[in-house]
Structures are given as structure tokens and as C-alpha cells.
Length: 360
Image (cartoon, rainbow, N blue to C red; front, side, top):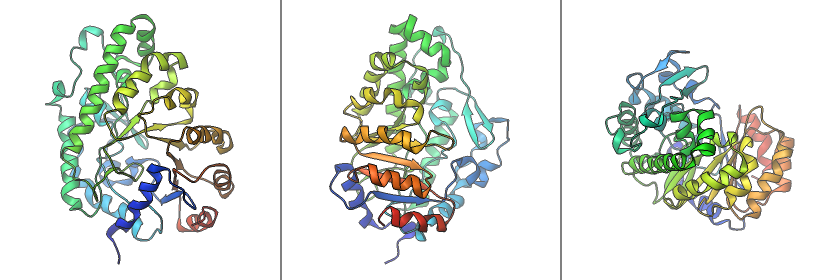
């Protein structure tokens, strides 16, 4: 039987084995022709003014839907293990916009502009306080339009939501956020708690409108199905902290968020590996996703970090592009239990080269 977008329900068993770290003969594996830069994948967002401001009225959710289906149809020609779904535009920082940040369109992506607010301007940071935000209403309308278009054919998920510290940085600025932790830790931690609750609430607001897909939840950025409530946590701004500051102030915040979701996973870059040990202490973070970024460190230098996650008995999702030699390195040095390799490729020929190395 042929399934739309390759979304065969039988694939769910592979995800269950991944989450449970059950013995398997090879990793869970998926391929995608998608770009690293979601702005350019959709005609609707490619038309936004480069080097200009992005306002909510320029984001028209229904204009994305045809391109979204086109991208998902790669699953009808690629033979792999994953389910394919959709989310509100991954180029937009929906939470930052909801909290009041301006958005600026850059070549290939969108950035949220830091606001550098004073403490007196930060009274009551919460989703309720932002209920009339045009960014929030556009985000939730995007969710509704995707759910309607899907009609159960593909899973829908929350959009790009950054972490509590990232929101603090968007409100106070990078340097000031660190200075706050050093000089005014009580105020800083209180703001972190507020942004953590904001993250929890805006994640739940989307999921209150999204039907489960074969009794499970989903994250579209990583094509990750989960048996329980899911959240994609990230703390990109942790790169400006010391390990001690992370453990003392941010680790409890990450725990606060993660314990609210059954299948919370942490999105990381190589720049965050210096606090990986402390993140692994947060048992409520069920899974770790680590990017093999374009221009990042050699894969060989990342393998010890991947192994560290596996020694902690956490599911590990690795996303990136890999040469055949790099893929052999992963296959030879990592456990297959609880391992999901989500591989960005340029064409079918690249898939055909990697498949036998991945024991597919």
C-alpha cells in the first residue's frame, strides 16, 4: 500500500524502539533534500524583503501550504524510516516575536532583534500578557491552517521556539543577560523562570490545537515522532555562559521545563558541548539532538560527545550532512540503540552511496 508522503504507520515502531533504546540491527535513519535555510524553501518567505523588517502581516500561512506539501512528497520517493510532517515556518522565531522582538530578514534566514530592555520595562513576562500579540495570533493561525490542510495525512507540530535563556537575551541583550546573572542573580533567575513558563505555555498553546498522529506527538524540524508530549528545548545563548553559571542558574530552569513534557529533547550545537555534562544531569531531558553544522568542527572531534550522551543512556539524534567516511566513523563508533541519524543530502545519488554504509 502506498501512503501519502511515505507516512506508513508501521514506521512508528522504529520510533518506539528509538525512544526505548531497544536493541536494533542499525540506527533509525532518515534523509532529506531540504535546505539548511528554511527561508528559501517557500515562495511565500523567499519574497520577504531582504535586509528589511518582517512584520506579522507579511506572514500569510495559507501561502506556504502548497510548497509544504511539495517538500513532504520527498517521502514518496525516499525509502527510509521516518514520518514527514510540517510546522509553522521554521524561519520565524515565533516566541521572540510574541514577546515583542522585531524580526529582521537576512540572506537565508530571519533574526530576532535584541531589545535591551530595562528592568522597569519587564513587568509580567507571560503568554497571557501577550495574548493580543499579532505574532502569536499569526502563529496559532498557521497551526490551524496546517491542521486543516493535513486532514490526518501528515503530522503537524509546534514551530521554532527557542529556550528560556534565549528569550532573556532577546529581552535584555547578550552581554547584559550574563552581567545580570553575576550582579543581580535574583532578578535574573526570576526572569528566567518567567521565560521558562512562557516557553511551556506557548508550546502547550499549539498542542491544544494539534491532533495526535497515530496516538503520538511530533517535532517537524527533526521529523521526530514521540509517544508522549513533546517539546524541543534549546539554549543557544548558553555559549556565552561559563559551566558554573549554567549549573547554578540555568540547569534548574531546564529541569523546570523538561519535567512538564514526557518526551522533551534538547537541541544543541558544537558550541554547547562544554556544558553537556551538566545538561546530562537533567534526567528529565529524555533525548539530545546535536547538529553537525556546516562549517562546524570535524565529525571525529564530535564523536566523544556523542558517546557521552549514549553512556548516559539517552536517545541521540544527530542531524547533518556527512561524507561516506564520516558516516563510517559514526557507524563504527556509536551504539545503534537509541540512535537516529537525520541526514541532509543533495540528491538521490548521495542517498544511494550512504545507504549501504548505514546498513539499510
